[in-house]
Image (cartoon, rainbow over all chains, first blue to last red; front, side, top):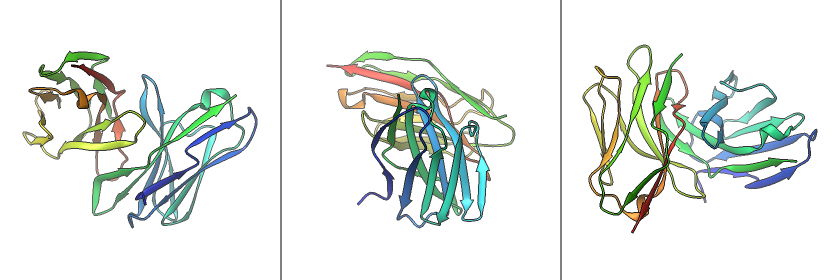
Length: 113
Length: 111
């Protein structure tokens, strides 16, 4: 089993729908992150959480929300999806004692039509 | 704020050619620097890292040296293989913050 699991792997949704992307990890890491990848733009940070009670906005948080349900689970929601949120979304984890040792999930490819 | 700039691609090389992908950064303090690689259809994997000035990171024949005076962390490989075809991301991090990535450089190696 993967250390960082993202579900679903692929999703097509309609404009205006609410959608949740889920991330779970077995690394025992306390820090979790959501990034978005667009061609030519690299990875941009949406939200990050350093522990269960800590949530921080990243560079492009507008239109997104997150929930840290447990140390191992970090969900990203699009309250009302729009086409320019079509992208590849990555969850990542790291540990406080090793803040540079990130582990990435395999990504969720989201298409909003 | 902190940022990373890397050369635009795509970079197209023949097998056994020398590779350089340029990366420069802007940051306060003394960040750690990284190269990540993304193979087709996969997530990101750490390729190498350097945590202080003059450190050299190396892995799988790839190298990069942390140059504080030029704020650079260029990726090099002496002889690329077809299997090196991927997207390469330069990134930086400082304590208490998340990784900041460059826009990525696509490398295509032909036999």
